[in-house]
Length: 181
Image (cartoon, rainbow, N blue to C red; front, top):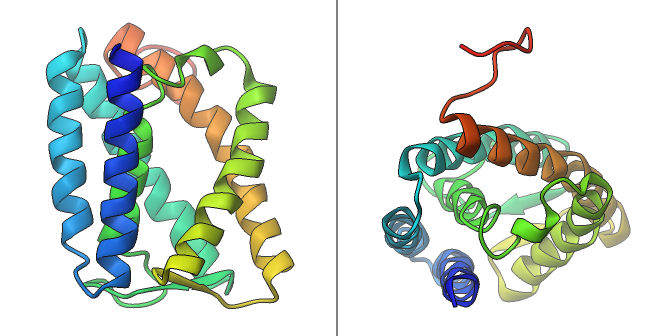
């Protein structure tokens, strides 16, 4: 049952971000995702680790989406941050995704090729849906934009799963030298 609640909460957060941005209410998404995160943290055995994972995911979103925007893969509905920086509602989507890594998508833990496939297919589908709903505009020819998004998500998705497993097991980030902090 926890996986179903987690998946449903993720969907609510995703639609709040996308439809809020598309309808000129970009605060809706981050507000709803904050509630999703609070719900998630209240239901997990390691809330500190999951909160850290959410921060890591937000940072990954800042890096990945800002890069995709700077490369011209897409243009989001703007809110607060100037171009080419990503928007807060897009970073909220990354936080929202992080809540699924150890719950409804936990079956992908330790399966980096499947996680990469999920990213390579699911990432572009989510961005295309965002384009269709009016939250972003794919700036390049659609196949080029989708390929860029797919490549980015193919790389970052297994990394987020690995980071999710590491953080929730140890409660901290790995040291860059491969040792615990």
